Image (tube, rainbow, N blue to C red):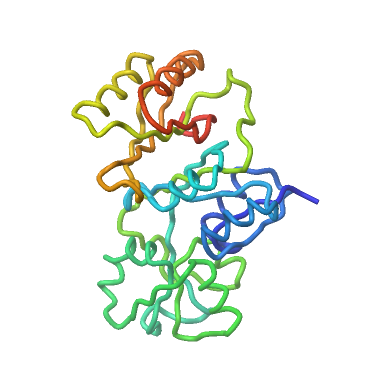
Length: 275
């Protein structure tokens, strides 16, 4: 039995494509229809690891997923960047003019808005997952209905791509993180990126002081995202990604940040996928 990898969505989704590119062939896919379900499958050991989208180059951060990682004490052990390709697909021997309705994930519909504006006869309907829509069209033999999904979904569900690459911005990538319930998998000499979470005092300059510590320790800040702390109005937690050349520099920064910030936690130490 292979490694059990949980994804949001089903076979043919972008999460499935990440699994195909990141892991070896010997895996068992655990399909989840929500990110909460994905986390539950990790926590009860239905899955060994999970793939979770965390940010998109156009739409920005998927903010609830930051909270899911922190609140459930998950650990980021890797990352993967996937170029997103949106294709309009339907049952075979149909044309775009014959399509009356397109169904897909809200993000996919948004990212194909310019193309869809040129087809006013097509009604847009939000669905839970790109590949799930493609599967429904195949299973129910739905004529006149199209899905927006990755090309792998057309292959899996015997559909025809009737309009390829319909995303408005062609250079569209999503960053995915690989998470599990235990921490580090790599030796220190291979680790050159980390994800952190901390809270600063509600005082002038407190965030700047923390960021200066990172700079002084030769850390490169690649991402910063703030989230309000629900229980404490007007107080914010910061989720930060940093890269570094030497683990010793990061270790020094960690020891300082533990002192200078509140609720400091390392969410993951892993290999930078952008190098």
